[in-house]
Amino acid sequence: MYKKFIELFGKENLLDQALETTIKMLESDLEMFRASKESLRDNDNAELPFDIYEKDKQINKFEREVRRNVLTHLTISGVHNIVPGLALVSIVIDVERIGDFAKNITELAKAHPTRLDAGAYEKDLAEIEEILFLRFDQIIKVLSGPDVELAKQMMSEHRGISSRCDKILGDIIHGKNAPLSASDAVVLALYFRYLKRVAAHLTNIASSIVNPFPRIGFRAKDIENQ
Image (cartoon, rainbow, N blue to C red; front, side, top):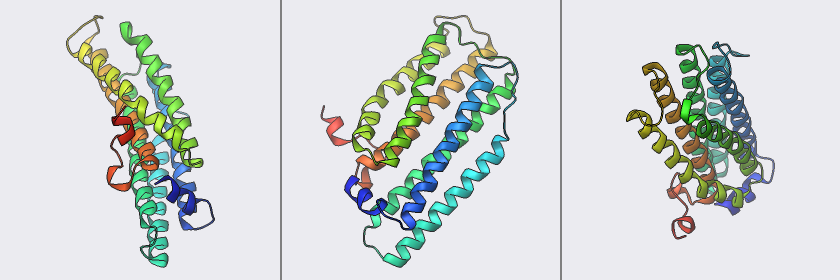
């Protein structure tokens, strides 16, 4: 898959334009995610510096633009090198879903207008948030390269993030470690769930660079064999 991306995305064409649009979408996702996190975790109100719903509409518009460019490219060039175009269409689905989860976090902030304190889970939560900010930066570098080794690294690290979120979710449900109010427990559990899903979509994008098309969204075989 990597060689095909290099071949097609290393020159000016409709797929190159589609890739540039996809990177813009990811940058918007990061902006939305950062603002929604700050609204929920750092502030005592649910205010945002921009209209997140308008930002989401722009991402949806970009997604349609990517699909049109890929379709036009395939119409003109035929089935030659069809896989990278299909992979890019798969990527923008994950990118769009990340924006949806950023909106979900904003809605949590509106339902919980005071700053969310994670109690005994604060250290874990802050670390997971920082890991996700790093992974946004990494996935943008992956697509801009493309950087197959960084994509493999992201895939290899995903299970640790996912397992960590699952363990904390289980602890919250069973009332372990910290006496949280019902409101805080519900919001915190949902937030961890959303963070896990954002991480999964970022990893899916990385898999689009590493894996052949039928295995996009799955673990790389060389990672499975480690």
